[in-house]
Length: 130
Image (cartoon, rainbow, N blue to C red; front, side, top):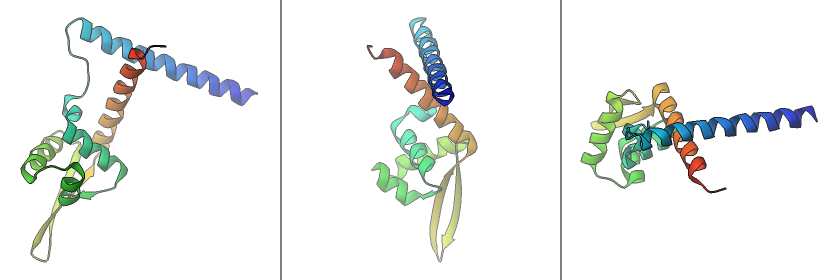
């Protein structure tokens, strides 16, 4: 019984937090200021890259290119932006004479993705009719 009360209280606190986050996002948008969505992650290719790296320890450039169905140039530009923000780490090496590039999600990148997902979840929760 006590465990159920703790779980219910925890769920209620989580729901309250989501509603507060959504209200903050909505009030900023209504005031004309942009919602604090991480624009760096929000773009499709970068969101896909960060999400894929969140569930894989590392992925090669070619793996990401196939997964995201994008070109070399497009992936390079987006990967560089994520590197500059220190959301991903790039490691370059050679296998024989063939260059190999692999990417890993950094702790900062993981935290940024978690914040982004929290913001999106709060916004969706607030916008859905009850």
